[in-house]
Length: 295
Image 1 (cartoon, rainbow, N blue to C red):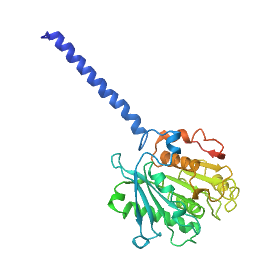
Image 2: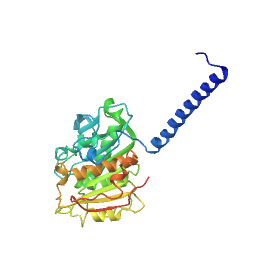
Image 3: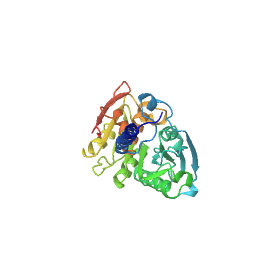
Image 4: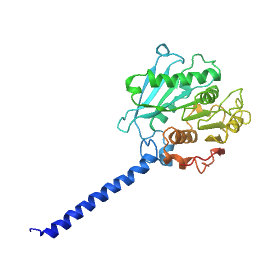
């Protein structure tokens, strides 16, 4: 059937209106995505954060101490996917006398949520917190500047973080204070003789164990948390009945909160705010303090 000129004009106008509506809808959906930061992966759920692995498949590569400067080598874990853009990166230090193998369950778990992770070996197993802090920063510099192209090409150098256990946790505080450009820090059962960290501006989540007899929360984690200015984003998670060595075995509550913190502040991904504010609760949590991040 042949359309008359008014009919053709009406259909042309209808198509134009539909096209403009679709374009407008596309623009409307683009704005929130941009505001949400560096979203990587599907919308998070309690189940996805509590699972042993996140949505990204990962690979790993070893780093020899002979090929690096400033730290003792280690293992790098990274997402195999390159379709969603670059990822943030985090360096993690073990504690006094320990090797990376004591924490190595964390490497693939965190990487599978969309991060490049380097678990470091320290120069010696007896390095003190200040030294471990410098080594964490050296490891990040290595990732960004000197790692293989496969690793380096996956990293956004503006989105870096640190974490560590015990003296490695003390080193995490030291690294955060000395490099305020970091996006996040997560000390785990941290130990340090310095109890005052008023210079920290990096968003910091301290995770302690209620029954820690090595770095008791009353003389370490809690004073550390209280000393960080309230103007800085911070949180304190105390695990119910946990000893000093809780990071050395798979700990779902710790991992869930740690990933949520990294995603919120390294990726600026506000989808993860729901796992931090209002504060998490449950039988595994003895106490939670926070500044309650808000987008």
